[in-house]
Image (cartoon, rainbow, N blue to C red; front, side, top):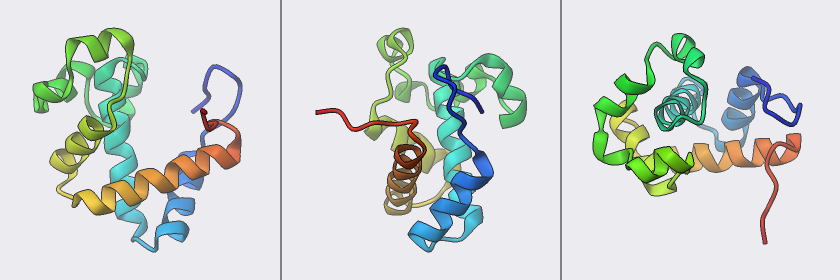
Length: 120
C-alpha cells in the first residue's frame, strides 16, 4: 500500500518483521495487522476500496463494535490506541498483550521505512 508521501508499506514485509521482532507466529501478526486495517477502514482512514481486500466495508467494521468508533474520531480520522486495541482483541480473539506487542513492532517497522516519525 502506498501512502500519500510516496513511501511503501509492504504487508508481507511488515508481517515478517513483526514475526521476527516479537517471536509470535506470523499468522497472529498478520491477523492483528489486518484487523488494525479493518479498524482504520471503519474510521475512514483507509479508502473504502480497501474493504474488498479486507473482506468488509467501513459500515460493517463499525457495526461490529459501534462504541469503538466515536463520531468525532471518524470525522477527524483519529486513532485512539485503546479503542484500536479493543477492536482488534474483539475482532480477532487475540489477547491484548500480543496485540500491543505486534502494534509496537509494526510502528518500529514503519519508523525504519520512514513512514512513521517520532513526535516530540
